[in-house]
Image (tube, rainbow, N blue to C red; front, top):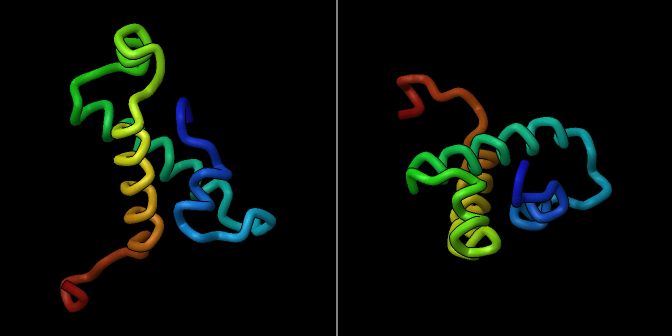
Length: 82
């Protein structure tokens, strides 16, 4: 992950910092969230750093919100649940 941290993700998802059973899953969801936001903004990480000197707060918040949604709805969905 480039701008999200595992600690920040756990705080966003209200997961105890010392709970490590799902760390790999959280990192995977975080990487996916960062990639999704970059794709939606049609930007690269390097472009953001070059233009703003850092990753803008709005992009960090959007990424955290995607992580939270991805974590809450991580179970497969079947047609009956829909």
